[in-house]
Image (tube, rainbow, N blue to C red; front, side, top):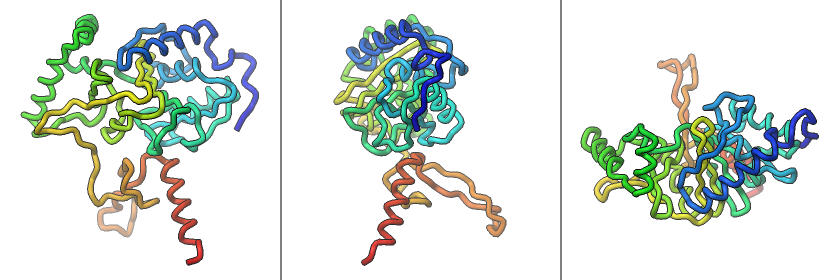
Amino acid sequence: MSTTPEQLYNFGFIDEDSKREVRRQILKAIALPGHQVPFASRDLPIARGWGTGGLQITMAIIAADDTLKVIDQGVDECVNAVNLRRLLQRTTGVTTTVDTTAASIIQTRHRIPEEPMRRDQILVLQVPMVDPLRWVEPNLERATIMHGESDYGRMWVYMYESVVKAGDLRIATQYPVIVAGRYMMDTTPIPRWDVMRLHNAEALFLFGAGREKRIYAVPPYTTIEPLQFEDFRFKTEFVAGQICARCGAQDAFLTSHFVVDSDHPDGGHWRSSCSDTSFCDKRVLVNATNQEAPK
């Protein structure tokens, strides 16, 4: 869908000077993969903590010929995704889509699409907490010095203690990684399933935190190494035998939800389905087509 952008606002809402400032910081972030670059975060008509950092990046880089997709935890129709998409579409007039392969810019919260991204695509991630060192060093100035000196010993101790206390690495999301052998980076609240999608990917990944006023990036073909021990390796949330109830996928990140059923003795049952709705819908269509095809 494409409409004329609202004339009350500049193209992409924020002013051109602000866009140039954001783009300069993006270029710096690309040149220093994983490094947190400060930027002057602007006020937007949404509350900080609801995606203002990613939104400002998208507003700064989007052009009239782009095709935009906005998702929240893999879903195109969540409240956050719908409202951000509506704001961007109404102030730019760009075409929007739910198809990952058709989009040139994808803004996301908490997921990386299941379908591999191409070199002509950009993924913009909304970031709630920028620095993984926040877990072990709340002082921003000290954490900055630690990044500058590659002093990540406290994080290794934190991970070791989690193994000793829980018998495993107790990090469900925001798993810390080393980018290009140098900076430790927060991967945002994406599941561990998505972490290695950043490794040597063809697409450009841009991370924006509006509340903390930071931008960082993972350029194409950049090495991503999750923190792990020799005897406690990084692993994903994969559960053998679990499949999507809609499309039958076993090679996708699945979420569970309770389905109410009055005939069931427990009042209902748990059902698994793909988190990435676009990916799931395509598989459902392919399965239906294969069933209808003559044998």
